Image (cartoon, rainbow, N blue to C red; front, side, top):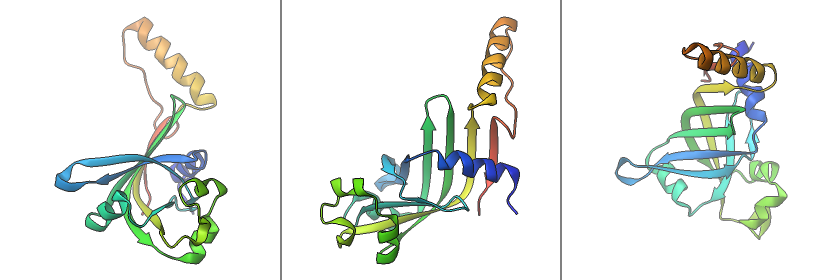
Length: 165
């Protein structure tokens, strides 16, 4: 059975359609780019569709460590640290295919240039200021400003760490 924080993390993750995928470029610098999320697994693994000849594919071939960040303004933010792998599974590409991908792959899901990036999360962290948490955040912020203290964050509700692997 999933831990409550992992369930909360999965619920937040499902609210995102895009993410920033961060890879290790040459000479230890990082490369970040927005990516459409093709699929989210129940264990919080992510799948992205990209071109076989893209820089991110080459970077993952060199160093599989990646970071994924999703943010919705001040409402919610999460990050996943994990390992990426590449897949050419045509059935999985067909399953993950979405009509808007045709902007990058005009030949459709059968384009031989398509490759999947599978991100297997190891750890995750979230900040949730949605729903009731938004009110708690607003209250804590105002209270901190008025009293000259630091706003309190409710661990496990507004903020949390999860072990994914």
